[in-house]
Picture 1 (tube, chains in turn blue, purple):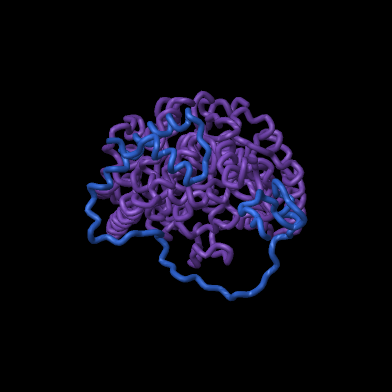
Picture 2 (cartoon, chains in turn red, blue; picture 1 turned 90 degrees about the vertical axis):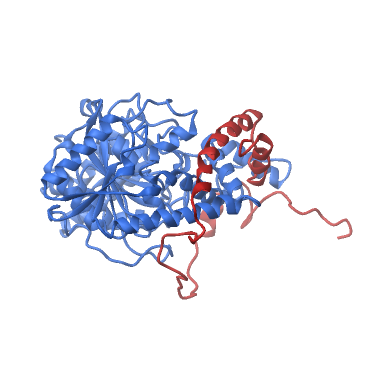
Length: 101
Length: 485
């Protein structure tokens, strides 16, 4: 059985919020099956006594003083926005209005 | 003006002899870059470059200017530049102009270097052929029907073709060293934590590192000197000052160089590559190094680890492209549909594949089997390098299993494409410094020699590389096309 099938690719693309065409869905499923098959070989490695490494750095808890500093100029940053309203990024409503409000 | 300078050291000398001014030099390089036939550049910044050059001329007149003053360079377009478009070669960043520069850019600005413009790359640095750019592939100056390598293919091609004296790239699994190898120049990835990633568009944050592409080993050390060092804006930078140029003349006599046998056995390594590397190893022996056969048994697990860790981190990093604050927005019927449509239209196929792969590896029910497992094998790979560096000073390997391949040859087979990085990505997994340099030709195309040192041992890396460069003439070979242009 392949490690991933078309319906799972569709599901994961949904989790990642990426719209795929039918053609992409078909093609990526085949390609990802080949890649995942190559990745499966990790199963054979005995890692029972090995801790995971998220990073190779010998650092932890890098602290600095919590001091206010100037931030980026609002106008320069907002000039990048696809849509704005005053000093705000404008997006579609993500909550519905309550009828009794 | 006689031929344009090739190296930083030559440029610095000619600027100081008053043979040419920084403004003349910037204009000459801007002309060369404007006439570029390899699609190496995404956008040039002539006004910015001339202004920097004018400042450089003033600094040179005052004396005591740093060595990089007035030296024209090429910036990979994943490195943010204040007021100058930065696209990561992606349609999703259409129209984006950063409000601030990356620390590496401000450090080069402070040295008086002259940034000519932004170079092409695989979209978000995902690729090893530069064919994944939304703005078309880069062509190899040695043979324009072939790829220059990637993802820093634009910077590599620009430097190889003499359109910039040096370039900056980023290296997540080989993206500086592999295009360096395929384009016949020096490409260097520093130890993880040496170079601030602040202002560099994030790909896989535990692997990404900025580094130089140059035509000489000393030049690579000079650029490292300028960009190394702790940065309060990047908590993953390490405070360990180093005099990177100190041992350039020290030679390799008495050093122990390891040859890991696993880097010579996989099928798919071209015989011409192996023989060039064997000749380089013989050269090191002649120079007085002790050659030691070593083993890194989990080398063949590197690819699998990399293709879990890297897409996982990428899928988290690239979730920021939502069409809300900058870049492309494709409006959908609601906010979630806007995200979906924006990413569907804005990301190219390779980025989508890796987002899906990474999201899958991190999703409920698969996280332990893929992501945690890969992190454990990452520990094993790191420990194997640690053990080998108990007995040797540096490792000598091929950079890439092949020379530059034809454009289009691997685009439909992601796994074949991923195998290009099989010798470079273990270095990122372990966070080590690595350098690729020219060591001859195979089928008329450059072969890259990879040197790997232990963490923070860049001085040893440059020492070994400089010794090889001084004893050989491979670095003097130049692409025919560029020489004729």
